[in-house]
Length: 64
Image (cartoon, rainbow, N blue to C red):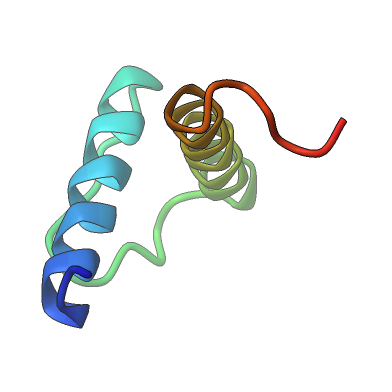
């Protein structure tokens, strides 16, 4: 199992990748200047990608 700091780094990388794909500029550290809509878009897309990753690694056999 991955260490906590490793997991945090991976989530941060995913967040940065998603923000970039949505054309939202994130700064290292505090990002209180982005809108709630932008933050929600980033979080929502992260969840979609994590679910897709889980489904592909479980053979698509999540609870249906």
